[in-house]
Length: 375
View: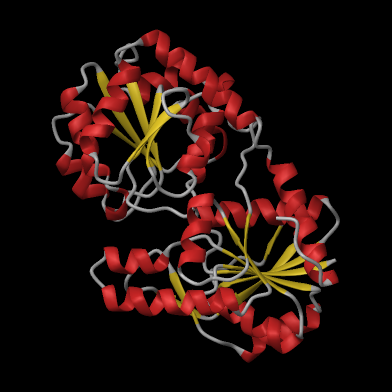
């Protein structure tokens, strides 16, 4: 089997989409499946045995960390020479839409998966007309594909409501050995808590950006005693958040990857995630695998993963009072916190990436054979 993956974002950028693309490539390599990646030109030439075909691009003016790619006949010629059996578009909007077009030109089955609510993001940044146009474009791209995959039941229902016709569910998983409570380090906890490891340590991992609603966590620190907050990640709101939280027990740890990221998770007590919107939120599963209960807004896959009061809580977007009370529920009751930590780990252990990726490969095979996908 030969698969061409088209993605709007790729290394060296690090985000949830890139992690899923990389995990997919790694698993395809383990299963002996040849792949090629079509991604923004940023210097990458190969990953997990898959050549990277760079697309000419410019910086996205709305989302400066992103790139906008331009159609290139040379890119199409390289993909055609690779002779894929299937096209997998990681969200059909720009480069992903290029993949849909190439799939039709090559007469190959096309699978498109949902990874970023770009229309919601445009509206959130004050561009509602652009958001509506993008929603129509993305829905068209999904319906021009042979099959589509949603990352959560919530997104699956949303896609169907917006007119996407054939939508399955591609669950998200976690490497429960890479993220594990055994990576707790007292020296890491001391650093993240600025020398106060006895306090309840709240953790956020991800982009520091307006759509994450991170400023709402100030109320938690002000109203729940003996709590501290650590941010792992970077982004355009870094300086604004530093000013917003001035005088409060907040630590900015910057980007962490690999073992350093696993240690940060395992050395905290609770994971907080007040985001306005997500396609899934892989960090939720990484936190749970590390033994952290999760307090999240009802976005992405949160409601698929969190059992209320057992391994965390979900609240409506913007419900600051709900976030405060959910943190208080665990932070002020050590026995509840410990039970929730065990429950979080147990939930994550049931979501192994290898099983989920094998199901994706079965979906590839069904589409190549012209059959109904199993997902």
